[in-house]
Image (cartoon, rainbow, N blue to C red; front, side):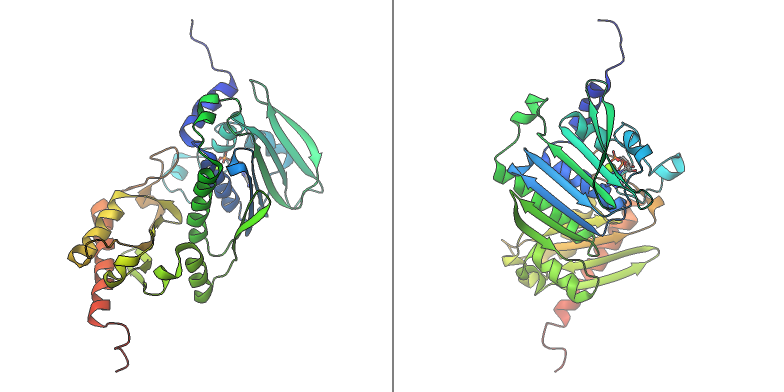
Length: 342
Ligand code: ADP
Ligand code: MG
């Protein structure tokens, strides 16, 4: 076989292998697109754990008719255009791959209307070259993406799907994480036509606590220590379970860097070190942490699914996190709850 250029669909399916692992990864990519589009309301409808249908509807800026075809093409993004942009990413997306990848392994319909347009348009990509068909549609300002029959044309992936309940559980978890990253956005989740979650938007502290309780449970919220510290351009805020409550904590370990959820060894290490000897046997750390720093100080282009980041000054960041958490835990011990007024 001589060297040849892969047909578009096949190339996109190869890329999909890295970002579209299961229905929950589709939900993550699409909801992140809605957030990047400035949506304040996102409705997620799932059928059969997402294997049959994933529908995400938002009230964001929409996509112009002339750009719908591009939106479905690989390496097409409105978020990055120069190397400078790449070195200081402020949006959740930047690779221009999600829509093309997802539509190469499903039956995807993209419907959208911008504020300027009188009419909405719907796009779908067909055949091995993924030629895009457009037709008029009815839709308020914003975008709906419908992903039906995920992996219908990639049987190896389809076989890896777990039960409806398991897949839906992963979707629920993705939305919990996103719900904690944007208190100002309403998010609803339905499964097989039934409402499952409703996260209402609100920026007051009491509304924060309400959403936190909805996601993490009251057992985490009630004893938790709230903190907010800033030092040399680094800010860390969030909630931390005191060591005294560590025994009956639900599994709450959420970390965000500039609004992007992630799992990071550096965070985990700093947290463990801060709790140190305080953690009782059988107990575990529980926390929701938000780190904010200059976008130039962190590289998010490390992994296609963007679960990881790299800090330019890792040691500094680690020590800052450690110090803030350590002090928070120490203060609680020297002023146990209820003793302050005596
Ligand atoms: P990326 O998010 O990395 O730019 P995507 O493939 O996820 O790549 O999306 C491609 C482009 O389509 C985005 O850059 C954006 O311009 C547009 N887009 C996708 N989803 C939406 C949406 N929900 N609302 C508005 N624009 C969108
Ligand atoms: Mg995207």
